[in-house]
Amino acid sequence: MARARKPVVEVRRSQRRRRTVSAYRDGERVVVLIPDRFSRAEETEWVERMLARLAAREERLRCTDAELLARARRLTSRYLADHADRVVPASVRWVTNQNGRWGSCTPDDATIRISHRIQEMPDWVIDYVLLHELAHLVVPSHNARFWDLVNRFPKAERARGYLEGVSAAGTLVMAE
Image (tube, rainbow, N blue to C red; front, side):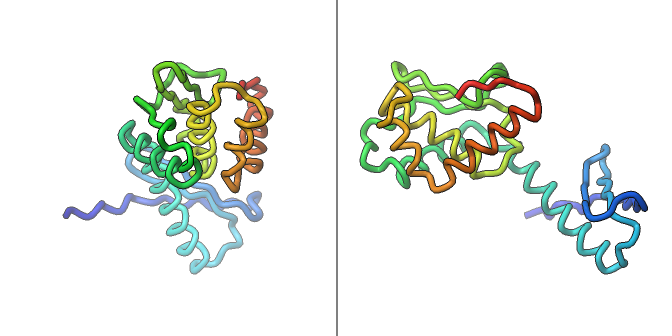
């Protein structure tokens, strides 16, 4: 098994930066932005932390449609097991043509589409969107029974707040 090569890292210190640390990929290298006051030990710690975060984000972006379907099946068995006979999606896939909603479900043919725009969001938000669409295979509308199913997800309210915040920050109106 080949080991992944560690990227070239450029650390940029800033006197204006007080507490935040950020990182981004610039071609083959990773640029890490840190406060100037950080010690060398803190720099080393934060570089490792940010490399791990970038790797996790990039791994999420590599998630295939097959992996998304497997994730949907895990969510079904965990939160909708009592409806497992009805929650059998024909397909679950990432799409790039959904700019007005996070996901959609067509109960008639059991297809689920998830906007590529959520790929970089936390896993619990992606899980919430997937579970929301899976619940439509049981209840097509947004009635009380539907929300009872969705709210089985422990972070449902938090995920809705996160998505509302993203929408507000981007001055987007997103349909649920």
